[in-house]
Amino acid sequence: MSETKAPEREPEPTDVRQQARSVTLRSPLERLGLRGRTLDVANWVSVAASIYLLITAVNIIGSGFKTATGDSADGVFAFASNPFVALMIGVLFTALTQSSSTTTSVTVGLVAGGMPIQIAIPMLMGANIGTTLTNTLVSLGMARDRENFRRAFSAATVHDFFNLLAVLIFLPLEMAFGLLQRTSAVMAEWSSGTDGGVVATVFTGIGTVVGAVTKPLSDLVKDSTDSLPDLWQGIVMIVLGISLILWVINLVGRLLKVLMVGRAAAVLHTAIGRGPVTGIGSGAVVTVMVQSSSTTTSLMIPLAGSGVFSLRQIYPFTVGANIGTTITALIAAFGFTGVEAEAALQAAYVHMMFNVYATLLIFGLPFLRVLPVRGAEWLGRVASVNKLWAAAWVLGVFVAIPLTLIFVTAVL
Amino acid sequence: MTEAPSPGLREHERELAAILDEAEQRIGELRLELSRREDLSAQHAELDRLDEHLATARVSWSEVRGFFDDVLHQLRGRGNPPAGDEAPGGLRAAGREHDDA
Image 1 (cartoon, rainbow over the protein chains, first blue to last red):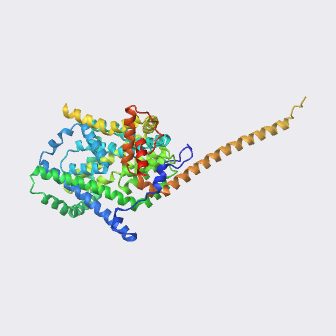
Image 2: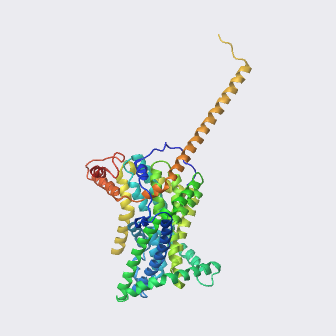
């Protein structure tokens, strides 16, 4: 949260806030009749188990991709060699799964399995755009009140505009100079293998332990599908891995909300009234706590819609959420060892550095910093007057443009 | 005919006017500070209910559907309801809620 907002209006209770009062966070484990301390312990054990399953699932995807493609991994993704198509695949997949963590984890697995990093980079960028759909959809629920909707839609789309601007700047830079590919390669080399110093030794050690723990389950899945032809075995493994990741990300998100709500509130209380850098930091920290940028950015929508928080306060928090969510791919990368580990780490670093660079550049340059805010304010204004604008934005950015680009590239 | 104020009186009036200006400026600053503190207080109060906000921080598909239903109505020319006059998720959603009730 950044500095306090300029006084706009008296905050007034809305139906959304009243509705919030009637809903409380519940752990899915409460259905088992667990309560109190036992429930807390069970929640934490479930989080640990979920992370184990997430890493195993990413490992299964990597292994499945290798099994399915053999030595022709490059050829399988030839259709996505056009960076715009790869970008749109990232947008669509994330919009469909409503989770950038799922897209980045799957991508990490695929890269470890042999998918070229040049294809993965635009996909990871696309994940950033696709994930903004969630809070935009949340804001549509506030359309009943024009003023609330204007503020809520602006707060949601400032994330869209920021991430679109980031891709607009960094995709051409990537195509021209391979900025992210080079940076991430250096970082991956530095943090993996046996001759990269202390960090590499620590990371390799973690990777070896995690790999040893996750390998039995991963091998079990592979062995149980061994009767299938290679291609189908690989496909089944990939589908199984993606399904597992989707389930785990959903479960861990629900558990962490319950476990981390107190700490997240403490972070946010501390951040109120401070500058934008603290806002970015708090957004990142809260997102790491709940392992979902969609959750943190959606959380801000009713708060912005009711006028309690201003768009300029929400903005840095949202940008911080972009950085915080990159931790999931990094965790997922620990499921591999050796050359695969270096590839997986490189993919995770791409996502991290893309968001770090975007934050430094766009937030660092005042003329760029204001663009997402202006765009969001304008869109919020016109959409509150005519809802067609909001519908066109949602369907255009997240559905029509990605599908058209993929279709046109496939046909031409 | 009124007598012109003496130079001492004029000086006194100027001092009073300056004091008034300063007081008004201070009042403005105090009001701004008060407003800032009220905003902060409201924000902290909202964060005290973070668990409720986290519980509702998710997509409500019925509201999304209601929103797009309204947009479709608007496109078909059955009316052009301005945002802000409908129930959650739009007119249809409102109808459904009434039905549910």
